[in-house]
Amino acid sequence: MIHLPAQGKNKEAVLEAMKALRQQDAQWRQGRVFSLVYHVDDELTSLLKDAYTLFFCENALNPSVFPSLRKMETEVVAMTAALLGGDEQVVGNMTSGGTESILMAVKAAREWGQVHKPGLQTPEMVLPATAHPAFEKAAHYFGVRPVRVPVGPDLRADAERMRAAITPHTVLLVGSTPSYPHGVVDPITEIAQVAQEHGLLCHVDACVGGFELPFLRRLGYPVPDFDFQVPGVTSLSADLHKYGYAAKGASVVLYRDGGLRRHQFFACIDWPGGIYASATMAGTRPGGPIAAAWAVMHYLGEEGYLALADQVMKTALKLRAGITEIPDLKILGEPAMSIMAIGSDRLNVYEVGDEMAVRGWHLDRQQFPPSLHVTVTPTHAQVADLFLEDLARAAATVRKPSLRKLANAALLRLAGTAVRVLPERLVSRLTGFGSRFLGGSGSGLPQRSAAMYGMLGTLPNRGDLHELVLDLLDQLTRVE
Ligand SMILES: *Cc1c(COP(=O)(O)O)cnc(C)c1O
Image (cartoon, helix red, strand yellow):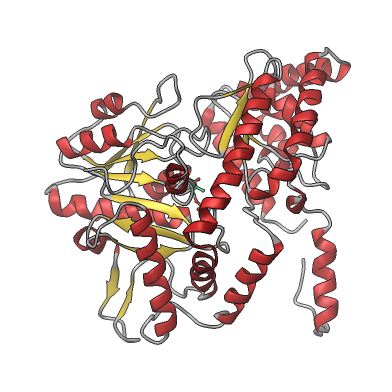
């Protein structure tokens, strides 16, 4: 048990203790991490911190008390709408992140369905297999049935298969620009047209692409149409805290018009505490992320975003070309921007990931098909060559047969049997592997996960896997 300390410590001691804790964390500043942190440079970060702390105490729950926050939030939303093809009718809100933006869009679609489809009981949403789990989360929270549709061989959504999945209960179709796993852009024009033909809503998940694709297009890169310029697109999400380079806790959800957004809102008029209304999920909302987002948009301007998009895309293209040249490795699909997946027809890419971890690189593991995920940020320009050299070495190491691989294979067979025979015992063993299973590998974390992933692939029952993952979550949020 950990208790509240009886006496307080001084500020320096508290901060020192926290700095010591960070020693074990992943080295994102050195470009060793390919997800989670979107770092530009120290100057931009210090602007974000200054802007954030300027509005550190203010609360955006009631914008009429803080006209400053209200002005900044509405301007951030308006600038985002203009960037993404919106006209004067397009409205939106800032949220804490892509997940909350998506939760809101799905919630709005559900309420819309209740109004426009009388008698509707369980609303359905049709989405490609690659759409972000936030949609699944929204479905789980709001009682919407997610109908997953396989993607085509190019890993993009298949609009005709989505059409075939529409039922009288469908309210919403979803496409991603790009999809997070592979960085490919779904055919939004086609999906939105199908939605329109059936009188349905269409959400574009531009969480990761919303602040990069418009700039790439202006730079002359081929970018398919995906925003409010496409007829039939009714809502859209774009994350400021990714390629908008804002402080974490900042995303925008946009709607074609105010009528649709109204379904997102919540009001409670009978509370003794007064009439309570809130536009998004959260009650109390920090002012910091709003201020930092407004600050970075004014600091960079279109010119700054163009320069960053150019730099990031050049690094991404260099990595793509380099990866394709490494024997037995390939890029999955045709990524449209600076996120991509490394796969292989011959090598176990999880083992390649392990070899990269040994060399200090953190890459997330993906499945169906197995791949390693790469999110390129400005920090990676300086390490691209080193990364490619290490990746070539990692692939070469995996190509050679070794004792460790034989041991892995044996462990896999053994574990496969164990799952069938003794699931509870296995659970307790697996939880010890928690962080690597979930893809983490900072300097202090375990680095080898290929055997684990191989074993999870052999689990006979997906329900067991679901329970295992919940156990891991439980374990990760307990004091060690
Ligand atoms: C990151 C991401 C999300 C979820 O956003 P969070 O900010 O992590 O909640 C949703 N969709 C896509 C495509 C993303 O890249």
